[in-house]
Length: 263
Image (cartoon, rainbow, N blue to C red):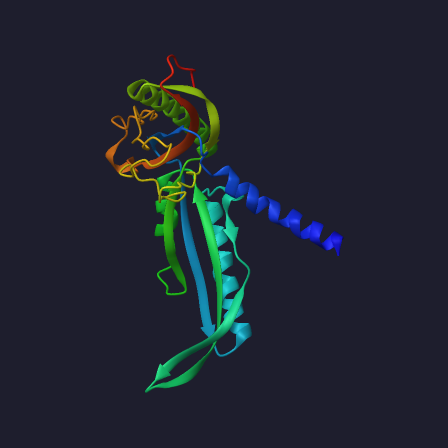
């Protein structure tokens, strides 16, 4: 019995630790949000395709889809897609029906596969899409863009967001005449506000209660500079993608003391 109690207690620890991580202290504190964002020209272009066939014979429907998939992969190689980023789902089979005068009619078996293809240039993706067959069996579901160095960009944005939160803390401490004693917590997730705001729903309009100073709007945003596209030909201008990073820092403060500790 004791062993089971111990196991249950251990399982409850992660949830408890998570709640503690995002809780605010009871002592006087300063809560700041650091923010950084940047606009970037995408270098990854993805198209998501849906391949389908319906036939009274399950075998025929499957064969039609496999034939389409084979043709697609030939075209994918031809247009220089990034092989490591090409994905194809397994076959999915289900009953195909329609309604006629309120009655369900069996049409056969529907077979489906999803294919995701990524290119390193917009022109390659355009040529690939132009070569797709004009058929209801091969449908473009969606397209998306991204950056190949997203992880590196997010690390830089995180560093700028941290610097932004430090600057905000320094300015607020000076404005309110309080001394920063040290850092209580740092997180990418907003802490649970005891005065009515939950994690992820930060609102600059929220006032302060108890020992907490009001949560300020971001100060001196540390955004990365936008990429200059002035020299890019019009037909190649692909728009931009926005990346952003928020950091939440809680500083312990001493009210009425002179001086300040650098955050």
